[in-house]
Length: 168
Image (tube, rainbow, N blue to C red; front, side, top):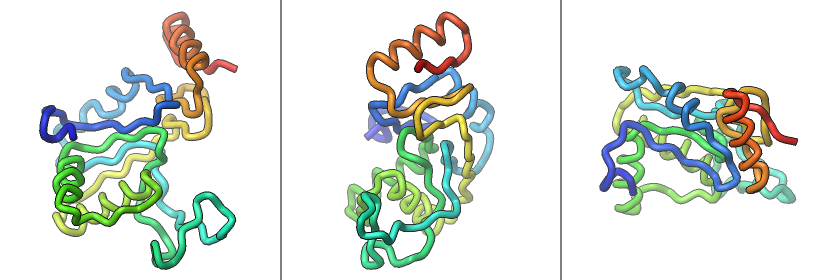
């Protein structure tokens, strides 16, 4: 894990079918180094809970997660966490003290909530709709569900126009 080998203020997780504008990610976190809060940056959900429809691919039983609402979490195509959260997750999961959960992005939200509760650290949840979890949208930071050709097109359009342009 990065926390043992790399000195970084932030860690970003992305899916392999996500096109990421690194310049925009850096701009989004610029100036946050001086803040004392821990950070989760992405398309953050704060109000939804487990899917209880047994026919859904996101079905979660009450035995798996009894609460009616998840802690805040960021959609999986890409999000940024501060290094203190990354270190906590790495260290605590290495000791097998974090509960595994089948939805990776929601699991991170659960672990961040555990960090907040046990370490008494304030968390800054930054919801940015430019972290697009359903394709590509104007002025994106992340475009999701992109195949290799689309990623090449996004890169070429970015170079050509010096701004994000979606490819159809």
